[in-house]
Image (cartoon, rainbow, N blue to C red; front, side, top):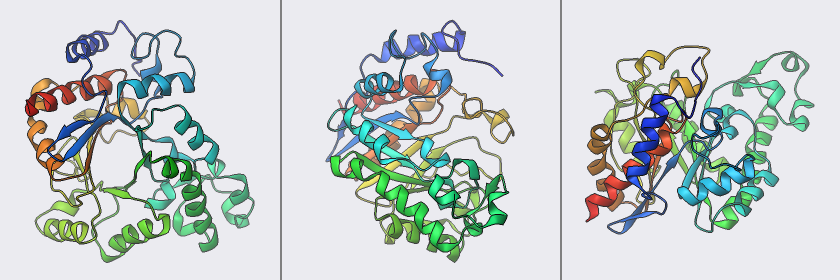
Length: 333
């Protein structure tokens, strides 16, 4: 497995390109009556925090890194909440360490979308109430949980995010469904139930191309538009059953989301590799430029548009976020 190094040719190229993009993307970009916020899907990936890659000398703690990151970009995605329920104290610290208008997009916990979670990562109070047969398992699914414990998962998640809500720093909860969730009445009901349970803004991302095949595309878009649920448009490797096409369609006038996963076909469905290797891809300027008018078009019709770079290997995501912001700014001139 390759590691990030400040002297790696790819890292050096990304650094040079980031310098050329200058300060682009530090603040929201006004587009029509809306605004676009660009950032990355992590500020803590080990390849990103390696010395000399993105953070300045001395930014060695989680607090210092978040404080620095929030001077460079106006939005970030929190991935850790997918693996473990957040705590209210953590959310309070995020509020304290970031500027007034900084925004956090929070990934929904695995149990909310049908993914398994490790029993060891559940809060102690929930683990203690698990039926005996579940405590012996390494991983469990939402279907395994008694209803009252599933209610506790949603309740604790919602309560923990309250400091972000009060501070006006919560963008949306990203509800990302696994590749085995196909278009169905059950899946659509789960989306609505998730929003109702959380009583928070959500944005939905699918991981199976059938949501936008010839049979289902119109119904998928109509459902999201009728319920004003933001759809997460993605750029990702194509040619797999899990591949979702790069569909760009506004489904809410409040929020639109774009997520860039890179185009690393070789590693897209490879097992037992770290996420940074799966998303290890540095977009070139032409690839970014292809998306610029699409992002601008949606942003003009939407109050706020979040453009998140999930290619978080080293400084790849931060560089592409800066470059994409520069292209958007140039388009407005």
